[in-house]
Image (cartoon, rainbow, N blue to C red; front, side, top):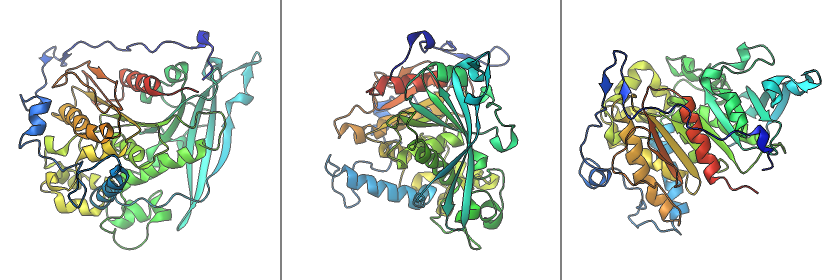
Length: 426
């Protein structure tokens, strides 16, 4: 990467939070992780009995040579019992640039992003089994960086379908100027432009007549292992990768995908499946995301069914509604699928109880899949996490901050640090 230093700022710590988080009334909160056991003690205990990652379906121990075969087994398990099977990629993806800020100057200087970046609004389209699908995205590319690394942000809002040409994304959803100042290109994708999350009900309402479901789904009922909305959102992220690989002005070897909450789940599933992705940037992903379900409330699946969120997974998951810990996988399977690439987890101390510990333990449980390939997995010198800790030495990173369930500037900076630490420049 060739960069003029005067246009680059060093990634700072952003908000430098205290080790404890005050509540609204000023009370200092000390989070209860639900266990006094250390990481090592937990994973060795009956509580820590989770599905075996490093054992083949036929009982053989996994070796370096067997890992590709084991990865295929894990993919099949996660598709059958988790997110459903993902259709093949389209033969071709087309792109129409609907707005290009490079055409607009003031005093012969680029207007967009204070002259530091080109903003493009692009309509992607591809053929699917039952029609053609169109997905609007926004690409913001720094002009002072040659072939920048890219972060695809699977975001909650705003939808570019509802915004005027040339209007930028809302900064509260990503510190976009800071991202480009640190040498990254940024792609904004609104998840509801893929399939609407708030449209629930029967299969016809939730899928067949909804977004991407219109061109992929048919019939009266959803099959047991037919994909859910997380799979569709992840599929949309991979179609953005398809498009980026057609451009010669971004780094094809360093395309990462980021998301928060249910879109943290999505970013992880996208990175786990798509081996072209450099790193999955997984933020506050919660139950069904990066954290071990064994550590969390096993009745959460019932909550998901009641709220309509079960649409995120495949139908078979309903068979485990009473106890998700009986599923033949846990979150460490998804983290392991990313090997030998990278995944970075950021958690908030003020999120739902145990989420922080669940991510931490999942990172440790997935580490052998990286280590067996001669890589650093999760590198941590502490047995339980504390707020403001940042571990980014290994292929699995983890950071924890005080505060609420949110994709904060601090989180973005930790993710950017992680990528720049591991990115191999040419």
